[in-house]
Length: 483
Image (tube, rainbow, N blue to C red; front, side):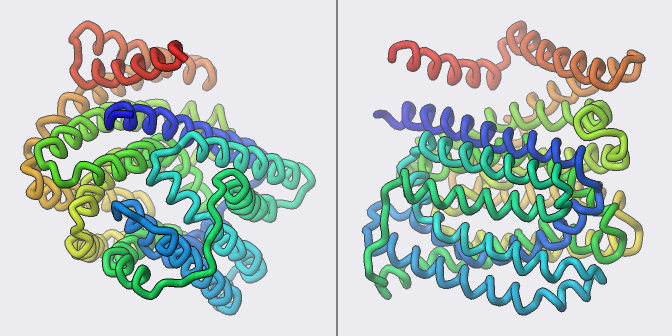
């Protein structure tokens, strides 16, 4: 299979994996939001940062180190597996014994027991990391799709059943634990890989040299992305945090899904051609353009339909989340660009520069956190938007310098997609304001209008990024027909 065919196949199954898996989780989240209250989502939101930090330590950057390494051995995989499992157990114990202190910090007595149970998910997730890494390295997302969809459907069914039986916040705990547990279980059953009884100090040292810097970078980024949950939970209320978490999850559905799809495929693909600068630049440029065409269209479209989508899907009790969602979409629309530019640093083996950039960007973000404490959530999100632009410039400057693809060239490449998406969003916003319809009717008309707008402009103008994305889709459809 050629590199192009591998990439298209990987993109296709990564797309199916992310949108099927996240789509199921999204639907489950909508159903749970209709049954449960913002306070219950807020309680879980308070614990998010602690679980996320623990997960960062468990992976420790070794997954990316394994993917980047050209000839991994069974010793490498087994060594990382045992290390991940040991760190998972260690951090569960840390969460368990610090649960009372965390509960006192937020002045929420329920949090102690919730964290002690929820923390088990850290260990469950650690058990399946290597299987997932091997499948990603092989660009095998077909099996990952099967695993993640089964896990999402199973965990969603359990959580919804518990919510309907009035288990409240515990249904959200069960959702996380069941998803991690089922994911790891089916990876062990279907991925076939089993660890050897060996721990190689040499393998550990080789991988840790690269992975340790990614661990610190990932840890800094994880704290930054989740510290807002902590700030809102501490200085505002569980209810307000519930509104913010739902808005953030709506925003994350298109933004992080696209990022996950592209990053998971592009990293191993680009790593395989890391020594051919011209080929690397050409492939990277196409990935940037195509990704941002889709991202701008989805994120700015969501800004325009935020109100009817919130009311239709989770009800009027969540109306305060609308403004948060609209603002977070502007902050999140550059997220795939951050990830792609940082991916290039990893491909080039510059985890040291990756780390330095993360430290600089997060120091610049400190004023945003202070703003949130003293001036409120909306001002805090405004600071996050400004921060996102600054972070994009820093990431693209250094990654571009390595392969001769500068920040200005990137902006020139993605600006037409941004302009097209802004025109589409403005059209949808006007339609929504002029039509006096029920929220569901307004939402359907706006979504259909957005799709027609993008297709019409793309076909009439022969918009390059639209045409390229369409060709990838039709090439994959053609492959399926031949089978």
